[in-house]
Image 1 (cartoon, rainbow, N blue to C red):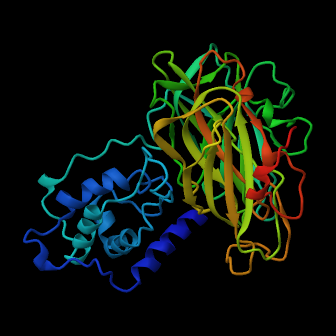
Image 2: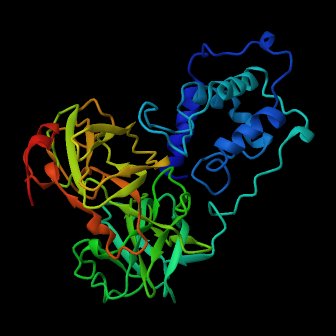
Image 3: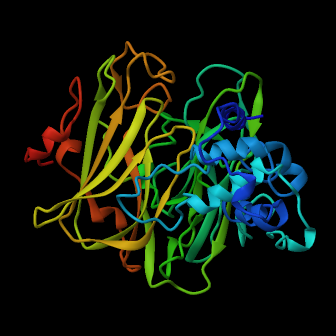
Length: 455
């Protein structure tokens, strides 16, 4: 069982042991009993089964009554406390297509089912089973797999690894969806699949399937990859790029580089991860491009600081539209906010969320958000580097940017809709403001937004 499975199972059992909720349903509230087949199963299909089915991230299945019945009380307490489904965005800022928040009516139904004896009901009332694709979020048109197992040590630090996989795309292709899956869920913490275009100097002499570590001459700069084609983080799932007549672009002759963050499991292990792709049926009206977003690689978090602020910024060089947000931090992260400083000077908060290292969710905007040329996109994060943070690896250290979990990061991956004919999407964004400052002993903080810093 992976550490994520242990965390989730422990969470459900712990919440189940809490005192009864004030939302307890009484028998007199409704003369009709709430049953699994008629009332509960539709809720689980819509909100839970994506993760709660065999082979997925959750440690227990909610596909059938037999699977679900033992967890009735735990489900009640988890939804009443809003621990499940995981969702961390502040509802006062932004509207999201993939919002997992349960309505009060839905929670009441689940509570009534648990309190009423968790009855099965009549099978004829049950909806048809969801037709999930085994092992994937959708039916793939193409699967790209590492050509050989990656050998992993039982203990110690495992440096980030980059593995070149020859995809040999015979022509330019548009990708409407991608799903990146670990071969070993216990060992893979997170990973990315990056498009390596033909002619790139990045890993140009790398042997396909061989894992190269950061600092190796073959790895070079990941910036020479054109785009993130797929991501895997706890709770993220497959990514759909087609919602706005859009798709991701992969040039003819491109290869894929798997960028891997592994963790030791206590015993020798192997991994062979895979990337599933769905091809667009026709050329899109817009290209979906993922930027690293505002990035605080110059961060410094003082030892013992329980609310350290780190601010980053980038500026757009042309008009574009924002459609996706995914903050990224490590074990000291507390919360993340995105503000826009428009060319007029107007400041607007468009996103605010709590941070949970165990659930690194992505947030799909319900509608594209217009971002005019010259807009400053500001990321604001807070960290707890004190001894009160039970996940803190070492509260006595001054923390800088780094790959490993005991280091920190501060950025927000962002999906944009751009002109399909644009040759270099990365030129749409440039680092600015606080992200250009030299590293100090703390910050950068919001105070630095007033500085006129040029590169």
